[in-house]
Image (cartoon, rainbow, N blue to C red):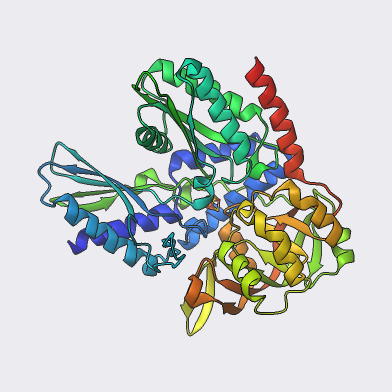
Length: 491
Ligand code: SF4
Protein backbone atom coordinates (compact mmCIF):
# COMPACT_ATOMS: atom_id res chain seq x y z
CA UNK A 1 0.00 0.00 0.00
CA UNK A 2 2.77 2.45 0.94
CA UNK A 3 4.45 1.82 -2.44
CA UNK A 4 1.30 2.96 -4.26
CA UNK A 5 1.18 6.16 -2.21
CA UNK A 6 4.91 6.72 -2.94
CA UNK A 7 4.22 6.19 -6.66
CA UNK A 8 1.38 8.71 -6.74
CA UNK A 9 3.33 11.33 -4.76
CA UNK A 10 6.10 10.96 -7.34
CA UNK A 11 3.50 11.19 -10.14
CA UNK A 12 2.20 14.44 -8.64
CA UNK A 13 5.77 15.78 -8.47
CA UNK A 14 6.41 14.93 -12.14
CA UNK A 15 3.07 16.41 -13.25
CA UNK A 16 3.68 19.65 -11.35
CA UNK A 17 7.28 20.19 -12.47
CA UNK A 18 7.57 18.75 -15.99
CA UNK A 19 5.05 19.42 -18.75
CA UNK A 20 3.94 16.62 -21.08
CA UNK A 21 6.26 16.59 -24.09
CA UNK A 22 3.48 17.18 -26.61
CA UNK A 23 2.29 20.32 -24.79
CA UNK A 24 5.84 21.70 -24.61
CA UNK A 25 6.39 21.11 -28.34
CA UNK A 26 3.23 23.04 -29.16
CA UNK A 27 4.31 25.89 -26.89
CA UNK A 28 7.60 26.13 -28.78
CA UNK A 29 5.69 26.26 -32.08
CA UNK A 30 3.39 28.95 -30.65
CA UNK A 31 6.42 31.02 -29.61
CA UNK A 32 7.82 30.82 -33.14
CA UNK A 33 4.48 32.03 -34.55
CA UNK A 34 4.12 34.95 -32.10
CA UNK A 35 5.26 38.55 -32.11
CA UNK A 36 5.47 41.63 -29.85
CA UNK A 37 3.88 41.39 -26.39
CA UNK A 38 2.50 37.92 -27.22
CA UNK A 39 5.98 36.59 -28.00
CA UNK A 40 7.37 38.19 -24.83
CA UNK A 41 4.66 36.44 -22.75
CA UNK A 42 5.59 33.08 -24.25
CA UNK A 43 9.30 33.72 -23.72
CA UNK A 44 8.51 34.30 -20.02
CA UNK A 45 6.47 31.09 -19.87
CA UNK A 46 9.27 29.05 -21.49
CA UNK A 47 11.86 30.53 -19.12
CA UNK A 48 9.56 29.66 -16.22
CA UNK A 49 9.27 26.07 -17.48
CA UNK A 50 13.06 25.79 -17.54
CA UNK A 51 13.30 26.85 -13.89
CA UNK A 52 10.61 24.30 -12.98
CA UNK A 53 12.46 21.44 -14.66
CA UNK A 54 15.93 22.38 -13.43
CA UNK A 55 14.94 23.23 -9.86
CA UNK A 56 12.22 20.53 -9.63
CA UNK A 57 9.61 23.06 -8.52
CA UNK A 58 5.91 23.38 -9.45
CA UNK A 59 5.72 25.36 -12.69
CA UNK A 60 2.74 27.39 -11.48
CA UNK A 61 1.73 28.61 -8.00
CA UNK A 62 -1.73 27.25 -8.68
CA UNK A 63 -0.83 23.60 -8.37
CA UNK A 64 -4.44 22.86 -9.18
CA UNK A 65 -7.25 20.78 -7.81
CA UNK A 66 -5.99 17.22 -7.87
CA UNK A 67 -7.83 14.94 -10.26
CA UNK A 68 -7.03 11.28 -10.78
CA UNK A 69 -8.33 9.29 -13.72
CA UNK A 70 -7.82 5.68 -12.79
CA UNK A 71 -7.99 2.44 -14.77
CA UNK A 72 -8.00 -0.58 -12.52
CA UNK A 73 -7.59 -4.08 -13.92
CA UNK A 74 -10.20 -6.66 -12.90
CA UNK A 75 -7.42 -8.77 -11.42
CA UNK A 76 -5.68 -5.95 -9.55
CA UNK A 77 -5.86 -6.83 -5.84
CA UNK A 78 -7.32 -3.53 -4.52
CA UNK A 79 -10.96 -2.44 -4.47
CA UNK A 80 -11.99 1.09 -5.67
CA UNK A 81 -12.63 2.28 -2.10
CA UNK A 82 -9.10 1.27 -1.09
CA UNK A 83 -7.64 3.03 -4.13
CA UNK A 84 -9.58 6.18 -3.25
CA UNK A 85 -8.19 6.24 0.25
CA UNK A 86 -4.62 5.74 -1.03
CA UNK A 87 -5.04 8.63 -3.47
CA UNK A 88 -6.30 10.89 -0.67
CA UNK A 89 -3.26 9.89 1.40
CA UNK A 90 -1.00 10.71 -1.57
CA UNK A 91 -2.66 14.14 -1.92
CA UNK A 92 -1.99 14.86 1.77
CA UNK A 93 1.64 13.77 1.52
CA UNK A 94 2.29 15.61 -1.76
CA UNK A 95 0.94 18.83 -0.19
CA UNK A 96 3.82 18.77 2.28
CA UNK A 97 6.49 16.99 0.25
CA UNK A 98 6.38 18.43 -3.30
CA UNK A 99 5.12 20.90 -1.91
CA UNK A 100 1.83 21.85 -3.58
CA UNK A 101 -0.54 24.59 -2.56
CA UNK A 102 -3.47 23.57 -0.35
CA UNK A 103 -6.34 24.17 -2.76
CA UNK A 104 -9.33 22.42 -1.20
CA UNK A 105 -11.86 24.85 0.28
CA UNK A 106 -15.21 24.33 1.97
CA UNK A 107 -17.69 26.16 -0.28
CA UNK A 108 -19.94 26.99 2.68
CA UNK A 109 -17.61 28.54 5.24
CA UNK A 110 -14.60 29.23 2.99
CA UNK A 111 -12.19 27.24 5.21
CA UNK A 112 -9.23 25.57 3.52
CA UNK A 113 -8.64 21.96 4.63
CA UNK A 114 -4.89 22.58 4.34
CA UNK A 115 -4.06 19.25 2.71
CA UNK A 116 -5.84 19.13 -0.66
CA UNK A 117 -8.52 16.77 0.59
CA UNK A 118 -12.16 17.33 1.48
CA UNK A 119 -15.63 16.24 0.43
CA UNK A 120 -15.30 15.21 -3.26
CA UNK A 121 -11.60 16.13 -3.39
CA UNK A 122 -9.29 14.87 -4.77
CA UNK A 123 -11.56 14.25 -7.73
CA UNK A 124 -11.32 10.56 -8.61
CA UNK A 125 -12.77 8.74 -11.61
CA UNK A 126 -12.27 4.98 -11.57
CA UNK A 127 -12.91 2.70 -14.51
CA UNK A 128 -12.52 -1.08 -14.40
CA UNK A 129 -10.64 -2.57 -17.35
CA UNK A 130 -9.26 -6.00 -18.26
CA UNK A 131 -5.91 -7.11 -16.83
CA UNK A 132 -4.02 -6.85 -13.55
CA UNK A 133 -2.56 -3.33 -13.67
CA UNK A 134 -3.45 -0.07 -12.03
CA UNK A 135 -2.94 3.03 -14.18
CA UNK A 136 -3.33 6.43 -12.54
CA UNK A 137 -3.41 9.58 -14.64
CA UNK A 138 -2.49 12.49 -12.39
CA UNK A 139 -4.16 15.65 -13.71
CA UNK A 140 -3.85 18.72 -11.51
CA UNK A 141 -5.89 21.56 -13.04
CA UNK A 142 -5.74 25.21 -12.09
CA UNK A 143 -8.67 27.41 -11.12
CA UNK A 144 -7.96 30.01 -13.83
CA UNK A 145 -8.56 27.51 -16.58
CA UNK A 146 -11.61 26.05 -14.86
CA UNK A 147 -13.23 29.46 -14.30
CA UNK A 148 -14.29 30.15 -17.93
CA UNK A 149 -15.76 26.65 -18.50
CA UNK A 150 -19.04 26.86 -20.34
CA UNK A 151 -22.16 24.75 -20.74
CA UNK A 152 -24.71 25.57 -23.45
CA UNK A 153 -28.03 23.83 -23.92
CA UNK A 154 -28.54 24.64 -27.58
CA UNK A 155 -31.80 24.19 -29.51
CA UNK A 156 -31.31 20.78 -31.17
CA UNK A 157 -32.26 22.29 -34.53
CA UNK A 158 -29.07 24.41 -34.40
CA UNK A 159 -26.86 21.29 -34.56
CA UNK A 160 -23.17 21.82 -35.25
CA UNK A 161 -23.71 25.54 -35.95
CA UNK A 162 -24.91 25.86 -32.36
CA UNK A 163 -21.91 23.91 -31.07
CA UNK A 164 -19.56 26.22 -32.93
CA UNK A 165 -21.33 29.33 -31.65
CA UNK A 166 -21.13 28.10 -28.04
CA UNK A 167 -17.42 27.35 -28.49
CA UNK A 168 -16.45 30.66 -30.09
CA UNK A 169 -18.48 32.72 -27.62
CA UNK A 170 -16.84 30.82 -24.73
CA UNK A 171 -13.37 31.60 -26.11
CA UNK A 172 -14.14 35.32 -26.41
CA UNK A 173 -15.65 35.42 -22.90
CA UNK A 174 -12.60 33.57 -21.53
CA UNK A 175 -10.17 36.11 -23.01
CA UNK A 176 -6.87 35.94 -21.13
CA UNK A 177 -8.33 34.30 -18.00
CA UNK A 178 -7.20 30.70 -18.70
CA UNK A 179 -3.59 31.80 -19.40
CA UNK A 180 -3.67 31.18 -23.15
CA UNK A 181 -2.35 29.72 -25.30
CA UNK A 182 -3.70 26.47 -23.92
CA UNK A 183 -5.88 23.56 -24.90
CA UNK A 184 -9.60 23.64 -25.56
CA UNK A 185 -11.91 20.65 -25.16
CA UNK A 186 -15.39 20.73 -26.65
CA UNK A 187 -17.93 17.94 -26.36
CA UNK A 188 -21.51 17.79 -27.56
CA UNK A 189 -24.50 15.49 -27.13
CA UNK A 190 -24.98 13.01 -24.28
CA UNK A 191 -26.18 14.42 -20.97
CA UNK A 192 -24.89 17.50 -19.17
CA UNK A 193 -22.47 15.52 -17.00
CA UNK A 194 -21.31 13.31 -19.87
CA UNK A 195 -20.59 16.29 -22.13
CA UNK A 196 -18.59 17.95 -19.34
CA UNK A 197 -16.58 14.77 -18.73
CA UNK A 198 -15.90 14.15 -22.43
CA UNK A 199 -14.74 17.74 -22.91
CA UNK A 200 -12.42 17.39 -19.91
CA UNK A 201 -10.99 14.10 -21.17
CA UNK A 202 -10.44 15.65 -24.59
CA UNK A 203 -8.05 18.18 -23.03
CA UNK A 204 -5.55 15.37 -22.46
CA UNK A 205 -5.67 13.81 -25.95
CA UNK A 206 -2.50 14.72 -27.86
CA UNK A 207 -3.69 13.45 -31.23
CA UNK A 208 -6.78 13.98 -33.40
CA UNK A 209 -10.11 12.22 -32.81
CA UNK A 210 -10.09 8.72 -34.32
CA UNK A 211 -13.20 9.52 -36.41
CA UNK A 212 -12.21 11.56 -39.43
CA UNK A 213 -15.39 13.68 -39.40
CA UNK A 214 -14.64 14.79 -35.80
CA UNK A 215 -10.93 15.35 -36.53
CA UNK A 216 -12.01 17.62 -39.39
CA UNK A 217 -14.20 19.64 -37.03
CA UNK A 218 -11.25 19.94 -34.61
CA UNK A 219 -9.10 21.49 -37.33
CA UNK A 220 -11.80 23.87 -38.56
CA UNK A 221 -12.66 25.04 -35.06
CA UNK A 222 -9.01 25.48 -34.04
CA UNK A 223 -8.48 27.72 -37.03
CA UNK A 224 -11.56 29.80 -36.19
CA UNK A 225 -10.59 30.08 -32.51
CA UNK A 226 -7.12 31.33 -33.44
CA UNK A 227 -8.52 33.76 -36.00
CA UNK A 228 -10.23 35.63 -33.11
CA UNK A 229 -6.81 37.05 -32.12
CA UNK A 230 -7.03 36.82 -28.32
CA UNK A 231 -3.47 35.56 -28.14
CA UNK A 232 -1.01 34.82 -25.34
CA UNK A 233 -2.45 35.99 -22.00
CA UNK A 234 -5.23 37.83 -23.86
CA UNK A 235 -2.79 40.45 -25.17
CA UNK A 236 -2.85 39.40 -28.87
CA UNK A 237 0.23 38.73 -30.98
CA UNK A 238 0.05 34.93 -31.22
CA UNK A 239 -2.18 31.86 -31.01
CA UNK A 240 -4.96 31.52 -28.45
CA UNK A 241 -5.12 27.72 -28.53
CA UNK A 242 -2.28 25.21 -28.87
CA UNK A 243 -4.72 22.46 -29.64
CA UNK A 244 -8.48 21.89 -29.81
CA UNK A 245 -9.95 18.45 -29.21
CA UNK A 246 -13.58 17.45 -29.67
CA UNK A 247 -15.73 14.50 -28.71
CA UNK A 248 -19.40 13.61 -28.78
CA UNK A 249 -22.07 11.18 -27.56
CA UNK A 250 -25.54 10.28 -28.79
CA UNK A 251 -28.19 12.55 -27.30
CA UNK A 252 -31.88 12.68 -26.40
CA UNK A 253 -33.91 14.03 -29.37
CA UNK A 254 -35.01 17.02 -27.30
CA UNK A 255 -31.70 18.07 -25.74
CA UNK A 256 -28.30 19.02 -27.07
CA UNK A 257 -25.72 19.86 -24.37
CA UNK A 258 -22.41 21.43 -25.35
CA UNK A 259 -19.51 21.67 -22.93
CA UNK A 260 -16.44 23.82 -23.51
CA UNK A 261 -13.47 23.29 -21.18
CA UNK A 262 -10.12 25.04 -21.09
CA UNK A 263 -6.67 24.04 -20.02
CA UNK A 264 -3.92 26.62 -19.64
CA UNK A 265 -0.40 26.40 -21.04
CA UNK A 266 0.40 24.54 -17.79
CA UNK A 267 -1.60 21.53 -19.01
CA UNK A 268 -0.20 19.14 -16.46
CA UNK A 269 -0.40 15.37 -16.52
CA UNK A 270 1.70 12.40 -15.41
CA UNK A 271 0.96 8.71 -15.73
CA UNK A 272 1.68 6.19 -12.96
CA UNK A 273 1.63 2.44 -13.64
CA UNK A 274 1.41 -0.12 -10.84
CA UNK A 275 1.66 -3.89 -11.33
CA UNK A 276 2.75 -6.95 -9.40
CA UNK A 277 6.36 -6.25 -10.37
CA UNK A 278 6.40 -2.70 -8.95
CA UNK A 279 5.55 0.84 -10.00
CA UNK A 280 6.86 3.47 -12.37
CA UNK A 281 6.02 6.99 -13.40
CA UNK A 282 5.99 7.19 -17.22
CA UNK A 283 8.73 9.84 -17.18
CA UNK A 284 9.27 9.40 -20.93
CA UNK A 285 5.97 11.25 -21.50
CA UNK A 286 7.17 14.40 -19.74
CA UNK A 287 9.99 16.81 -20.58
CA UNK A 288 13.41 16.65 -18.97
CA UNK A 289 16.42 19.00 -19.12
CA UNK A 290 17.52 17.62 -22.51
CA UNK A 291 14.24 18.71 -24.10
CA UNK A 292 14.53 22.36 -23.06
CA UNK A 293 14.77 24.95 -25.83
CA UNK A 294 14.41 28.15 -23.87
CA UNK A 295 14.41 31.45 -25.76
CA UNK A 296 15.81 34.63 -24.19
CA UNK A 297 13.46 36.81 -22.13
CA UNK A 298 12.50 39.41 -24.70
CA UNK A 299 11.73 42.59 -22.87
CA UNK A 300 13.33 45.86 -23.85
CA UNK A 301 13.05 49.30 -22.35
CA UNK A 302 11.23 48.43 -19.11
CA UNK A 303 10.60 51.26 -16.61
CA UNK A 304 11.68 50.90 -12.99
CA UNK A 305 9.13 51.86 -10.33
CA UNK A 306 9.91 52.14 -6.63
CA UNK A 307 7.06 51.44 -4.21
CA UNK A 308 5.18 53.25 -2.77
CA UNK A 309 4.34 55.06 -6.00
CA UNK A 310 2.81 58.51 -6.33
CA UNK A 311 -0.21 59.47 -8.40
CA UNK A 312 2.19 61.15 -10.85
CA UNK A 313 4.18 57.89 -11.27
CA UNK A 314 0.97 56.11 -12.22
CA UNK A 315 -0.23 58.87 -14.55
CA UNK A 316 3.07 58.56 -16.43
CA UNK A 317 2.30 54.95 -17.33
CA UNK A 318 0.64 54.15 -20.65
CA UNK A 319 -1.00 50.92 -21.80
CA UNK A 320 1.66 48.78 -23.48
CA UNK A 321 4.57 50.00 -21.27
CA UNK A 322 6.68 47.36 -19.55
CA UNK A 323 7.59 48.00 -15.89
CA UNK A 324 9.51 46.40 -13.02
CA UNK A 325 8.57 46.98 -9.37
CA UNK A 326 10.89 47.27 -6.39
CA UNK A 327 9.60 47.62 -2.81
CA UNK A 328 6.64 46.20 -0.90
CA UNK A 329 3.73 44.41 -2.53
CA UNK A 330 0.90 42.55 -0.79
CA UNK A 331 -1.08 39.58 -2.06
CA UNK A 332 -4.86 39.64 -1.88
CA UNK A 333 -7.38 37.38 -3.56
CA UNK A 334 -11.15 37.05 -3.14
CA UNK A 335 -11.21 36.38 0.61
CA UNK A 336 -8.61 39.03 1.53
CA UNK A 337 -10.55 41.59 -0.54
CA UNK A 338 -13.67 40.76 1.47
CA UNK A 339 -11.73 41.03 4.76
CA UNK A 340 -10.29 44.42 3.82
CA UNK A 341 -13.80 45.72 3.23
CA UNK A 342 -15.20 44.15 6.40
CA UNK A 343 -12.36 44.94 8.81
CA UNK A 344 -10.12 47.47 7.06
CA UNK A 345 -6.55 46.85 5.83
CA UNK A 346 -4.23 45.30 8.43
CA UNK A 347 -1.36 47.60 7.38
CA UNK A 348 -0.76 50.84 5.48
CA UNK A 349 -1.13 50.08 1.74
CA UNK A 350 -0.97 53.66 0.46
CA UNK A 351 0.81 53.79 -2.91
CA UNK A 352 1.61 50.06 -2.81
CA UNK A 353 0.70 47.29 -5.24
CA UNK A 354 -1.99 44.71 -4.56
CA UNK A 355 -0.96 41.44 -6.16
CA UNK A 356 -3.71 38.96 -7.11
CA UNK A 357 -1.75 35.90 -6.10
CA UNK A 358 -2.08 32.82 -3.91
CA UNK A 359 1.54 31.72 -3.43
CA UNK A 360 3.11 28.36 -2.63
CA UNK A 361 5.20 28.88 0.51
CA UNK A 362 7.26 26.72 2.84
CA UNK A 363 8.90 27.37 6.21
CA UNK A 364 12.68 27.00 6.20
CA UNK A 365 14.65 27.61 9.40
CA UNK A 366 11.63 29.30 10.98
CA UNK A 367 11.25 31.72 8.04
CA UNK A 368 8.74 31.74 5.22
CA UNK A 369 10.17 31.09 1.79
CA UNK A 370 8.22 31.62 -1.41
CA UNK A 371 8.37 28.66 -3.77
CA UNK A 372 6.02 29.92 -6.49
CA UNK A 373 4.03 33.13 -6.75
CA UNK A 374 2.43 33.77 -10.13
CA UNK A 375 -0.71 35.85 -10.64
CA UNK A 376 -4.25 34.58 -10.25
CA UNK A 377 -7.29 35.41 -12.43
CA UNK A 378 -8.01 39.06 -11.67
CA UNK A 379 -11.56 39.10 -13.04
CA UNK A 380 -12.73 37.37 -9.86
CA UNK A 381 -11.97 40.58 -7.95
CA UNK A 382 -13.90 42.84 -10.37
CA UNK A 383 -16.78 43.59 -8.03
CA UNK A 384 -14.67 44.44 -4.98
CA UNK A 385 -11.60 46.07 -6.55
CA UNK A 386 -12.64 49.72 -6.65
CA UNK A 387 -13.83 49.71 -3.01
CA UNK A 388 -10.64 47.97 -1.87
CA UNK A 389 -8.47 50.53 -3.68
CA UNK A 390 -10.48 53.42 -2.19
CA UNK A 391 -10.21 51.92 1.26
CA UNK A 392 -6.47 51.21 1.10
CA UNK A 393 -5.02 53.92 -1.15
CA UNK A 394 -3.07 51.28 -3.14
CA UNK A 395 -2.32 52.56 -6.66
CA UNK A 396 -1.27 49.48 -8.59
CA UNK A 397 -3.02 46.19 -9.15
CA UNK A 398 -0.99 43.25 -10.45
CA UNK A 399 -2.64 40.14 -11.84
CA UNK A 400 -3.44 38.25 -14.98
CA UNK A 401 -6.21 38.11 -17.52
CA UNK A 402 -7.35 41.69 -17.00
CA UNK A 403 -10.28 43.28 -15.16
CA UNK A 404 -13.67 44.63 -16.15
CA UNK A 405 -13.79 47.69 -18.42
CA UNK A 406 -16.19 49.15 -15.86
CA UNK A 407 -13.15 49.82 -13.63
CA UNK A 408 -11.51 52.11 -16.20
CA UNK A 409 -13.38 55.29 -15.12
CA UNK A 410 -12.35 54.59 -11.51
CA UNK A 411 -8.71 54.04 -12.54
CA UNK A 412 -8.89 57.35 -14.39
CA UNK A 413 -10.38 59.29 -11.51
CA UNK A 414 -8.16 57.90 -8.74
CA UNK A 415 -4.90 57.35 -10.69
CA UNK A 416 -4.62 53.57 -10.66
CA UNK A 417 -3.05 51.16 -13.19
CA UNK A 418 -3.41 47.43 -13.75
CA UNK A 419 -0.20 45.54 -14.51
CA UNK A 420 -0.20 42.07 -16.08
CA UNK A 421 2.36 39.49 -15.04
CA UNK A 422 2.72 36.54 -17.49
CA UNK A 423 0.08 34.09 -16.27
CA UNK A 424 1.47 31.05 -14.50
CA UNK A 425 5.10 32.26 -14.59
CA UNK A 426 5.22 31.60 -10.88
CA UNK A 427 8.89 30.72 -10.57
CA UNK A 428 10.03 33.84 -12.40
CA UNK A 429 7.90 35.81 -9.95
CA UNK A 430 9.31 33.96 -6.94
CA UNK A 431 12.88 34.81 -8.02
CA UNK A 432 12.09 38.52 -7.62
CA UNK A 433 10.69 38.09 -4.07
CA UNK A 434 13.58 38.77 -1.74
CA UNK A 435 11.81 38.49 1.59
CA UNK A 436 8.49 37.59 3.19
CA UNK A 437 7.94 40.55 5.51
CA UNK A 438 4.79 39.23 7.09
CA UNK A 439 1.44 37.54 6.62
CA UNK A 440 -2.08 38.44 7.79
CA UNK A 441 -5.17 36.22 8.23
CA UNK A 442 -3.19 33.02 7.61
CA UNK A 443 -5.00 30.82 10.16
CA UNK A 444 -8.39 32.00 9.11
CA UNK A 445 -8.03 32.01 5.33
CA UNK A 446 -5.26 29.49 4.60
CA UNK A 447 -2.14 29.97 2.47
CA UNK A 448 -3.58 31.03 -0.90
CA UNK A 449 -6.15 33.50 0.47
CA UNK A 450 -4.05 35.06 3.25
CA UNK A 451 -2.47 38.49 2.76
CA UNK A 452 1.28 37.98 2.24
CA UNK A 453 3.64 40.95 2.42
CA UNK A 454 6.62 40.62 0.06
CA UNK A 455 9.72 42.71 -0.49
CA UNK A 456 10.45 42.51 -4.22
CA UNK A 457 13.30 43.59 -6.45
CA UNK A 458 12.76 44.20 -10.16
CA UNK A 459 9.50 42.28 -10.06
CA UNK A 460 8.43 41.76 -13.66
CA UNK A 461 8.27 41.98 -16.60
CA UNK A 462 4.86 43.59 -16.05
CA UNK A 463 2.81 44.97 -18.92
CA UNK A 464 0.69 48.06 -18.22
CA UNK A 465 -2.50 46.49 -19.50
CA UNK A 466 -5.01 49.05 -18.10
CA UNK A 467 -3.82 52.59 -17.48
CA UNK A 468 -5.16 55.67 -15.72
CA UNK A 469 -6.16 57.32 -19.00
CA UNK A 470 -9.01 54.99 -19.92
CA UNK A 471 -6.98 52.56 -22.05
CA UNK A 472 -7.08 48.79 -21.79
CA UNK A 473 -5.15 46.37 -23.98
CA UNK A 474 -7.71 43.68 -23.17
CA UNK A 475 -10.54 45.95 -24.31
CA UNK A 476 -8.80 46.53 -27.65
CA UNK A 477 -8.15 42.81 -28.16
CA UNK A 478 -11.69 41.87 -27.12
CA UNK A 479 -13.36 44.49 -29.30
CA UNK A 480 -11.44 43.12 -32.27
CA UNK A 481 -12.30 39.54 -31.26
CA UNK A 482 -16.02 40.41 -30.96
CA UNK A 483 -16.00 41.96 -34.41
CA UNK A 484 -14.37 38.84 -35.88
CA UNK A 485 -16.78 36.64 -33.93
CA UNK A 486 -19.71 38.54 -35.44
CA UNK A 487 -18.33 37.95 -38.93
CA UNK A 488 -17.70 34.24 -38.27
CA UNK A 489 -21.22 33.71 -36.92
CA UNK A 490 -22.78 35.56 -39.82
CA UNK A 491 -20.89 33.61 -42.49
S1 SF4 B 1 -1.03 28.73 -15.75
FE1 SF4 B 1 -2.62 30.23 -15.26
S2 SF4 B 1 -4.61 29.18 -15.44
FE2 SF4 B 1 -2.95 27.64 -15.35
S3 SF4 B 1 -2.89 27.07 -13.22
FE3 SF4 B 1 -1.36 28.65 -13.55
S4 SF4 B 1 -2.39 30.59 -13.08
FE4 SF4 B 1 -3.97 29.03 -13.32
